[in-house]
View 1 (cartoon, rainbow, N blue to C red):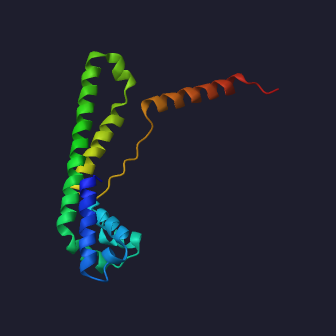
View 2 (view 1 turned 120 degrees about the vertical axis):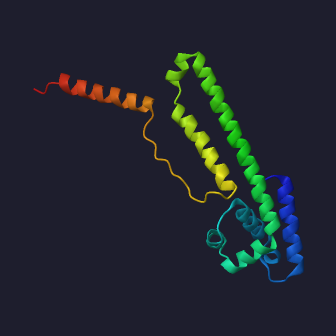
Length: 167
């Protein structure tokens, strides 16, 4: 996380710790910073409670105390995610332009991998703005090159079996 956001988190933890005696901010400021960062990244209260061994009500009170800071962290993260998405799309477009001019590039490039990367960047952006909480797991099969290598290996094994004669 950028230094500006990190500094704001530290100041907010320090301010909250100086007001009340029995807060996470006062007792364990490092843990409080991590909890606020996790809340900013969109982690659930239940996930944070399990990870840091804190009561859910404690985390909910922290979230309420630092609500504006958490919103700022989310905006910061979503801005970076959007920029990554745009960069990925730009790279994909440049790759397509290069391939139009060179048919050999089309044969060498696994477009699916590149397109999947851009898709994942898009999902990361959508998740960072809070639109989609579900995670998509993509189970991919082998690439064309992997499939061709497996076919050649199978042909070689079959050829060796046909040519070997046991006497």
